[in-house]
Amino acid sequence: MLDPTAAKSAKRVAIVIRDLGATSECEEGRRMLFCKTVLLFVVTALAEILGCYLPYLWLCRGASAALLVPAALSLGSFAWLLTLHPSLGAGRAYAAYGGVYVAVAVIWMWRVEGVIPDRWDLLGTALAVVGMSVIVLAPHSR
Image 1: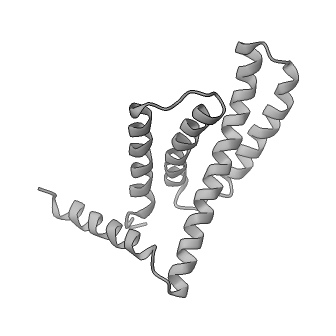
Image 2: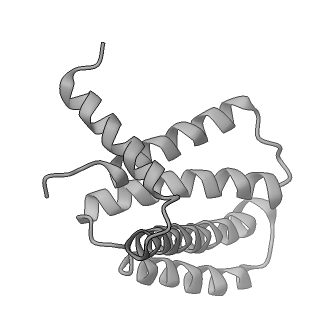
């Protein structure tokens, strides 16, 4: 049985998810902000992954050291993109970003590295995204 606080939070999350389909101008704005934030998280994750993947290619796969230049630029972009994340509090914003990062990393593994995600990859990704959603959509007191 859920405790009353958890039940109330679950109900609020369900209402927010339901309301994402609403068509009022205010709701449309919220949906757009949510989509822009997720897109920003995806771009940030790509910058971070690329900035780390290129040195990996150099160190472990014998690629050219010239890859360190775009890697540094990508990591610089990653740091700048972090400053654009919504101010839910730095910890909350980074935790929410982390859920998106996990999903993007698994997609990267599949599409760039050619490793097909197994059920455990998919389950872990789903848990990370659900956790991120709880952090973002929960009715925080501050």
